[in-house]
Length: 168
Image (cartoon, rainbow, N blue to C red):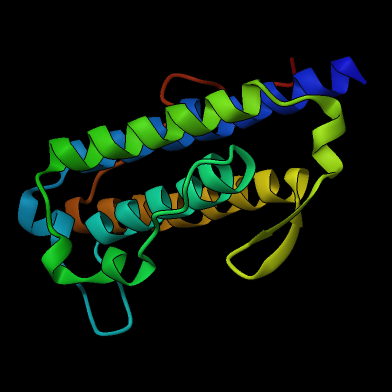
C-alpha cells in the first residue's frame, strides 16, 4: 500500500508541478498582455482567466477540500475581464496554489484516499478529487497550449529534443 501511495503522490507532482505549471509558465511568458487577456468570442475565456480558474479549482479541491483550508473561492470572478492582473502576479499566485496542493497530497496517508468529501456540491473521495484536479488541469492546459500555438504560430516544444518513438 505504501508503494501505491508513493506512486500516486509522485504522479500528482509530475502532472501538476512538472507538467501543468511548467507549461502554463511557458505559455504565459511568451504571450503579450493583450494576448494573455484576449477573449476570442463570447463562448471562450482568455488564457489569463483560465489560469485564474485553474488556480481556483485546485485550491478548492485540494487545499481546501482535502487539506481543510477555508474555501475562499469565488468562481464567477475567475471569468471576469476585471480580474486582469499582471502576468508575473498571475503566475506567482498559480504556482503558490499548486505548491500548496502538492504539499497537501504529499502529506496524505493511504487511509485518507477513500475518505468521503463534498466539494462544489459533488461527492468525492480524496482520490477522486485528486484525479479530478489532474484531469481538469490537463484539459485547460491543453486549451492554453492550443491558443498559444494558434496565436503565435510556434511549437511549444514541450518534448523538444526527445525521441517520442523510442521504446526504451
